Image 1 (cartoon, rainbow, N blue to C red):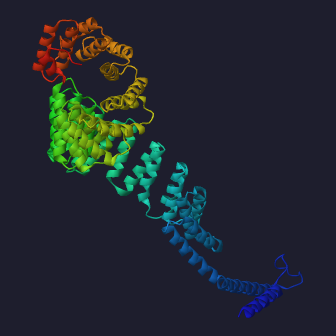
Image 2: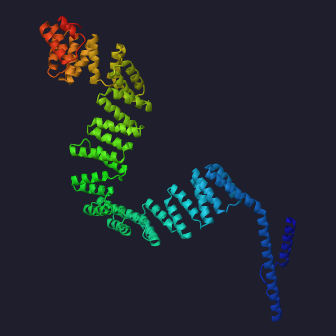
Image 3: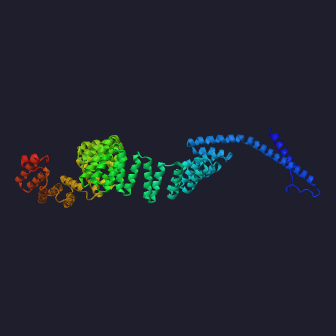
Length: 611
């Protein structure tokens, strides 16, 4: 068949040549021809032209048929490659998708769908330049397909080519029938570029096509507010209310607009209108609370807040926003403010009893208003519903330490460390708990481990070293104790706890007394009336046999102390100064006050000093 067709084409070519005429057109008839002969010649020429046109038409038709037969296999191959490419797009394998689609394109470059899918694959793989080119080609090849314009606009907007994207949407709306819904997209693009007049014109066009639509009014309000055209914005709000007379949310939006623009009386009027539609609406109460606050009507504002928080429909995000505002003010000089914050927090827990955030917020408020036990209970409830928040565990541990509840401190640090083993502060308090439980070996282990986790915090290192100094002293590992204290003082030379404890322990051991005197004297100079620090300084002087100096400092401490050991020390000094009867009297007073030293009973029995 191929040979027959080619032969036929060759014959047609010869035939066409046999009919060919000079390019100058039909020759002018000779002057000698009669009119009848001229007409006959013209008729013959017309017949020849007609036959030539028919031959050319037949040749074109045969060529088209031949080409169709020649490309049928290629067309099938192109379609198969296209389907394969689309499959790989769905599998998110974009390199393979492009490989197949580009092969399909090489066979059929004028296919709009192929260009569209190549653009989509390029967009998804991040090649925005090629995505733009192929998407643009798709719209030119098929200008009536909305999806092609949408993809092109998306690619352009992704590259922040907003002008180009707006033109694309404009073309879509113009070229594609029934595409008025895309006016909203076009308006959004204008808004993104802050082209407010163009956005407003587009929205007005949409309103003409679709009538009263809530989204149109909201967007027009947004534009009018940006243009400082409050009256027009309010007018749009009134249109919404008239169109939806039973919808309280539109009334509330209008009230909020009045409130935010200091039209407070109007805000109250419209908010009360919303409450007539929905008496329990918490947002209406919130608007009224804010308006009354701005009008300095604080009691009415507080009452509206309570009504809003009493509603189960008030979202926890709104509650949190209000409560955080109070947290920033706490503790407040006015107790009524502190109490209101606690009341709102309790209402939040009632509305959201199984939400960790509600309990955590209550814990923060209880902490700041100095209700430590209630705060810890709230935090523990928060952990019951979400134990993944380290900050909540930290708050529990800090309160345990403040309340001196050693068992709770040990239990909670152990539980927290199972979740947060790399938090040095948890190891610190765990070590402190073991120290308070008279288990210094475990305390040292926890403290040493936690110290290794400290990163770039000299202050925190100093805290660990201070505790390690105490712990190693309890274990009678004095060199390690002294080294830990000295390290703590490098971090913080004015650490009163370290200066006092270190000097006292040195005095008990009777070593480095000059160093002890210097450290303890520094503390007493800073706190001249503290009985504990005066007792330490006196005992250092006592060990240095400066009994008069020790007596003077102890007598000053006795003016405020309730510590039996201070009284016992005073008796020891008096004994060294030869005032034995007065010494025994002070020892007896120390015994009545409570626990002193283990040697006190021997001192009283033998009326003799034991050290």
